[in-house]
Each structure stands twice: as C-alpha cells, then as structure tokens.
Length: 119
Image 1 (cartoon, rainbow, N blue to C red):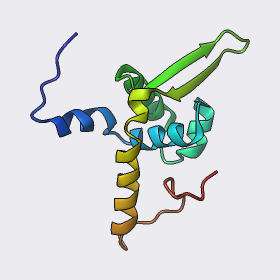
Image 2: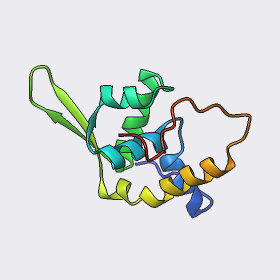
Image 3: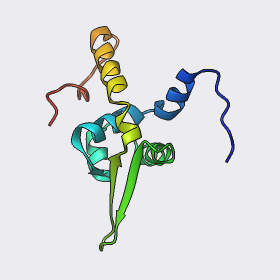
Image 4: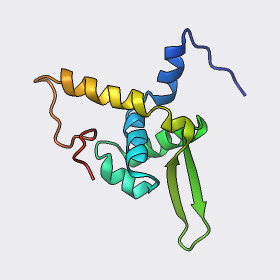
C-alpha cells in the first residue's frame, strides 16, 4: 500500500472527509441509517452519479462507511456508517453550525442538508 504524505493531523481529516459531497454522505448516513445509492442521490441533489460513486468508494476505502451487497435479484446494495465514520458526528455538526452562522448573501441554499427539520 502506498503511503500518503501529510504535514499535520488536520490534513489526515481533510483527506478523508474532503470532497464535493463526503460530509453530506456521512451526515446523511449518521442521521438516517443505512441507505441505498438511489436514496443518497435523492438527498444529495447537487452531485452527479459518477461523483457520488467515487466518493462512496473513497469513504469505504477509508473505513468510514460499509458497503453491503445483498444476494437478491436484482442485487441490493446498502451503505451504512461505521464506528470510525460515526466518530466524525461532532465535527460534522460543528461544520453545519459554523456554516449556518456564517452564511452570507453570496450563497443560496434551496435544500438545506443540516437543518434538524429534515426527516
């Protein structure tokens, strides 16, 4: 396995959760439990199918989510948070709070992901 050179501990975190939608995937799995690809696509509207696939693979590779394939016809695949991924819950919550407090007129948020209203 090739080693990844990092300069500090914060960079380790950013390498694992940095990405177009990784924090949103993690937050959704923490909040809603195991989900199928199509459910994640519906919840994370601003991402392409290709990007979501790649981000899910990276999160799985980093041990933050678990991909389970059920032997059914057609095959069913679910993604769930791992304990390692769940340990990011407080960081993700703080990111949501910071964004809520610091959003300004440059941003438009038609579909808030972090608000407690989502069910």
